[in-house]
Image 1: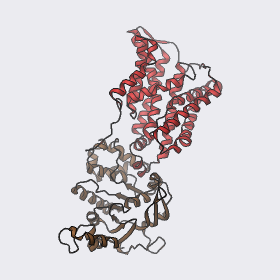
Image 2: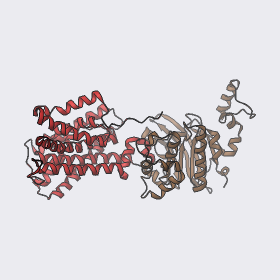
Image 3: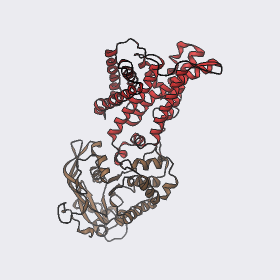
Image 4: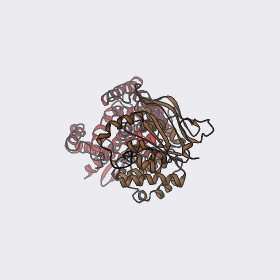
Length: 290
Length: 280
């Protein structure tokens, strides 16, 4: 029971970070139709930007976070403006190749400045542990879970209720019709990339706090694929459920079966989902009136 | 001013320039090679309903896309001529900006946002507006059926409900000119009548100016004040709606009646039809 509880919290906290990372991916896919293979690199850039501001420049944490957000938005918008917009109308494969190239470029830039050595970051959350049902749960895991949950909720509410959230969903539904109601599709595209980069930043920082600031963050970013395939490529609630599920699957596999298998487990899920339910649990079925 | 006084020769700057929209001799080219509109001109006077009629491929939809700025998204462009709306040259204006200026388009085939609810569709329609509550009340009052089912997903609505929603969504932007592209498309005859009654009511109650593109000339001419007939990218005929409805050629080619007003056309007349139509 104790082990179960610990694994549960570990799984949920990592799953929530995954959900944040994947949400950015889904935002871009939904609004612009681009499959962004550089989402992991956005996590990387987010983590290193925050590290630079917080550790190297010794800025207060909130200012460092603000710097991170600004850099993330700028990078996201620039990528959209300079790299993806000229690709509008090109085939899916070309666009995928471009984002793969972008991933290589972004991670090389980070490596150029920071090298490959992992860097330690001072703890962002209180350390120590909380006793729940005789199990001791690290407090920072609970904090991570809390922060991720708050950000996910904010993003979901933004998407469901706010004017710009509705505009983003309109563009995802029907670009031309969105233009006829006065929505600037270009601005929505830029907004999606900016927002995706910000959610990746938060995921990157939370992840770096649990582990270290290192290039390995990219591998974590790769896990967004099992998450979005499981949740459905274009569903926000699906992404959150998918993220938590993949986080739990990884931790329970590591705890109960074999830690070596844990790294593969998400991809086994990926293959199974593709076989059984290719549009994911919550994937939007196209509405066709008869 | 009677609709008949508006003539194709009238341009802004001329003494009678009370048109809300005037399209002056525009040419539209798709993909740099396909010339779709060849010097088209039309005027929409303020407070009137104007019908733009014509057969398939005449360029009616292209005209509306040119006016609403949707051509760039389809590799089309207005290569010459000008479009003046409310005293402002909008020929090169961004589509989103035109909506802000008061130009709304209801696209052919309704194009509601299928995964959004009715309420969200209307909210999206008010994107250019600072506050939407007042307009939302107006739309719900105008279409009580929509108000009753406002949390339903738009994709699952019936065709008639979607048409109402599409018009309601366009109204959310507080347009000065509402353009409708084939509102009758895919609707049952009764719903077509209802849609055009709605348009007439909007015009009568709020003074909204309307430009409607239709293939169903009969129902369109019933509510319109003025009509234009297009053939192959040009305006071929323009008159008051009543005069058009009485015009023997229009009767024959668009209203499906024989010249003497009796019975249906037969295949014997096809040759004659072709010859007359070329002239038209």
